[in-house]
Image (cartoon, rainbow, N blue to C red; front, side, top):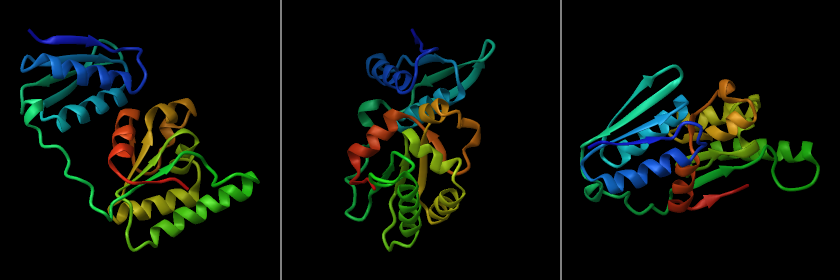
Length: 196
């Protein structure tokens, strides 16, 4: 029998964590998860795909979504990511300024850092923005332009969906993709981290 989880009203990353645990326990019986926003549905699809499941998300009732995980590769046979090469790293932008001191000067420093990042011989694999760092992918024209340059060079730019919601910036995302705290934690655990 297919297990069902009602994760409506739960904030990131709880739906993903509950789904991951349920998939580990469900064997090949599949899983259905109810969520109340499209970002949660996308995060669940990403989880299922990474674990080798066939995943579908569909509208459910008025504003809700149902995400269905069906038999694919068993979790135990999914190949884990290979160890990180020495030249891959992750840049974490957790605010809109660099260092402590004058806020306006700190913002200029961070803009300079992101521009300098575009000129590095070895680029990061990911740039992750959370908390006030999401303003760098939404409101700041200079950093949006430089982050787009990084994306053109193959860097993945990710912004925390919960943070975008909190600051009322979800509809203003101009570069990169929305992610969740589970994925951010996973990336920070598996990559060397640079925090300006």
